[in-house]
Image: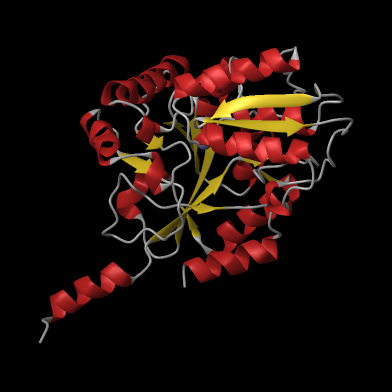
Amino acid sequence: MYGESMLRKLAQRTVPQAAILLYHRVADTARDPQLLCVSPENFAGHMEVLRSRYLPSPLSARESWQPGSVVVTFDDGYADNLINAVPLLRRYLIPATIFVTTGFVGDAKRPYWDELADLFLWSAVLPKRLQLPLNGQTKAWEFGLEGPVDPSWNLLDGTSCARQDAYLVLCDHLRLSATAERVETMALLREWAGRGCANSGERRFLTEQELRRLAEEEDIEIGAHTQNHANLALLSAAEQRSEIVEGRQRLQDICGQPVRCFAYPYGTRLSYARLTQRILQKEGFDCACSNFGGVVFPVVSRYQLPRFLVRDWSADEFASRLAEYLQ
Ligand SMILES: [Zn+2]
């Protein structure tokens, strides 16, 4: 019924082409409430698995991907990408793409998830009561004499105190807020706490100088990730374009090289729109990565490349998950 070439084409469509991995941080830390860190030891194990069993490939070499190709990417632009990850990438000769949110460069702005963690989870004292308007309703928390939460607590542990509850509710709320509303809510919280939230330095971002050094690495490609880690689906076309294009321009100014790839902040199907993809295409981006799992089949749109989020797994767990993805 089918000719041989048609059967070959159908087979090609169903053979997993490649897997793109999504990391955020490579660091040893007890405090990782969003589960964004992979320890350097585990990361080295992951890279060893990639080097020995797969075909590590750059994101930009999409045309030459084949079954078994694996691409390493990082989101946001934490300094530990350069300090901890690059030496291990070099050791195993693994290329990688690092998507940088320009507003975070040099810690000019901090992401709300880090600021909220410093404030609600780990600050020594909090004012007794917080009352905030959220989505047209008033939300209130009583903190009483609660001290900082256990450093090992993370979002999968559930909540057992007002600090954890406020942290998770506000993270959810701000993820779904347009940039202006997010800025306003954070300003209200800083005023309520009576201070700015000092960065402990444990979770700092790349400086301009470090970003330049990163871009000079032979196998590292820098990608765009907006100016303000914006939830693009909530913005007008003009605002989306500005977040995308100005973020890229600043990266190009700092790194002195063209930036051709993009990763959607948050990256779920609800955090960007068709319009966002059209803007990226029109502005000459080569591809865009999402944050939902899946292998890259030849028919996948290059503006919705799926990625597998990698957690702090041992090398064995990483190997078995990757084998499952690419079976
Ligand atoms: Zn991000």
